[in-house]
Structures are given as C-alpha cells and as structure tokens.
Length: 158
Image (cartoon, rainbow, N blue to C red; front, side, top):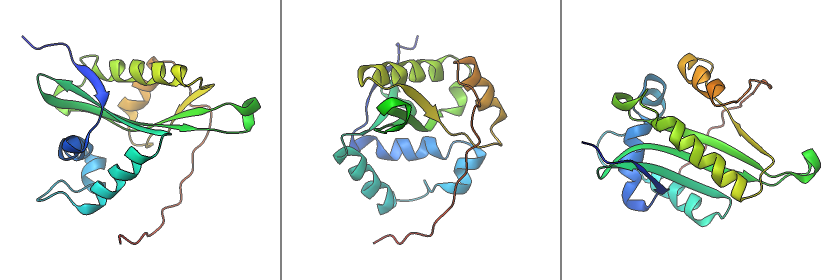
C-alpha cells in the first residue's frame, strides 16, 4: 500500500528527479534534457529560484519518490488595485500516476500558498496542445479568460 504523498519545497538533491518529470511527456521531451549528467543550466536556474523570495519550487513525494512538481512565483503588481499574482508553471505528475488526484492535490497546495501570501489571483499558462491539461485546469475552476503570447529568446549559458 502506498503512503499519502507529501508536498514540500524542493531541495538541490531533487533536481535530477524534477528534470526527469519535466521530460515525462511529448512536449517536455522536446524542450528538456534528462540524458546523461544533469546539465549545468538546471543547477544555475534552481539556485536562482532558491535565492528569490518570490519563487518556490515544490515537489510531491510518495514513498520516497518524487512523483510531481510545480513552480510557484509571486508577482507583485499595480493592476487589480495592487494585487499580487501567483503564477504556476512547470506542473508535472509522473505519467504513470496521472488521473489519481495527485495533480489536484498539488494545485490545492499551490492555491493555499497563494492565499497565505495574500494573492488576489492565481494564473497559469498552458500549451495549446495540452487538451487534457486544459480540462484538468478548468475542473479546478481556472478559466481561459486571456490569450497568452510568448517570444522565445536565445540566451547564452555562461
């Protein structure tokens, strides 16, 4: 029998497992690299997240195995009468465990954290190709109220 999963802030030792989760779908496999030794870019990015008080990377652990993750960023703003927004990114649940309610638990945790930080809004972006994810987010009460746009930049990795 599996134990109840716990959600906690990620630590450096979780990084390889997090990257493995990020590659655990078709889109992730095309964007991430979990082959061989962990690329330095992930270590640098994780260190930046750890240093930033407005960023949290959470993992869901079950029986000692990382089975889910997400990043939560708190964005202070002037719009909506100075409301802080909570932005959710990098959401993953191990593909073998999807449909068991683990993603819902991750989001409940993230929304509770947003409330603790007195956020006025929780938002996320999702790839248009992720139809199942869209249905999941809508079941949580999220509405596709805006059209998102992105501009990819070439960045150096010093």
